[in-house]
Image: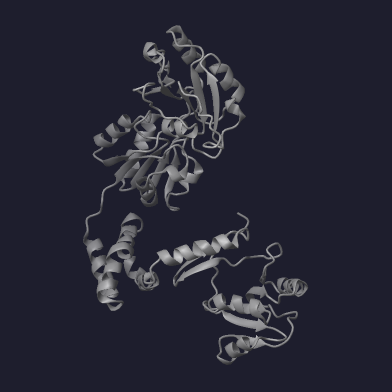
Length: 464
């Protein structure tokens, strides 16, 4: 991010536009929506600028921009349509201590003006750092259609009520009041009674929330899926947006954690097989501790919480503490990995059963029904099997599995850095050693990548 988005306070402050043509007028169309004091400096101002000056909308100075013209100015726009003149203006304005934007000159500008969706006081700024103005305009048009024109009315009246709403305790209770107002009671009152009915509706709503008994804490055990934020369920996204505390494991990437509320407490409870780990008892204690204090806790697990996620232990701890809980499924790594290589986990006349197994458990390498897995056509998704690859290979071949049985190792399934290593059971340990995988790996035993390049253009020579 080269440009940090902020909203600058402009009430009563000077903003200077240097230029008298259409470019300057275009900037003024948006600047006139602010409460800034606008000054335009131009040798030959457009008649429209002169009309604005007569109406008191701007202060017009009919001469070239000079030293001292940007003193006490918050912002200066160099908008003369002459690149050399714009650069001269920028040098003088910077010397006066102002931030300068050279219109259509991203490299020399100190700030940029985003595309704006205006529902005053709700303002949405859309920026592409100058890379794609057409895209910014398309996003703006889409948002303009989606957001009701009454949004600004709700926000203005709500803003005036904020001091009274401070009677509610900070945090969840106050958030629930405002959510109720903006998404339920407020729109209903506005539709039924108009603006005059909003104040009464707010007072009644506040009284109900003040009188309501405080809600107890709860824990939602949520599947974060394989790591792609777009593969999160809608329910998971909503819960992340509401959570006071998010306790996550190491397989949850930053892109998903960023979907949590900015004010939420984020706790890393990561575990790594045969490596550093937070004890399960400590994770359970964390959930209980925060929920017992009234917090809404999201226990965020990679994949699906019910697939090798020690879900039962966490549910038992919450139940023993008398806390409310729910489980929100996620897309498990086996599904994401199979999708990435264009294969089905089950197939008529090949396998009517699918096994989800773990490569190791608390005691070490895990024993399985190796004889059943060794039968021709068997398919299994082996979680946490990277370190136990040689053990798995030995057990399967000992029980009659064919050496040429296909195995595909998928690393970082569904993430941008995902890759697949196609091999056979005989070469599995060697192939994984050569690949030197550093991310989470799932082994798809009995499946090879589908080779149709037209259908899967992302497949590489690793599949050869």
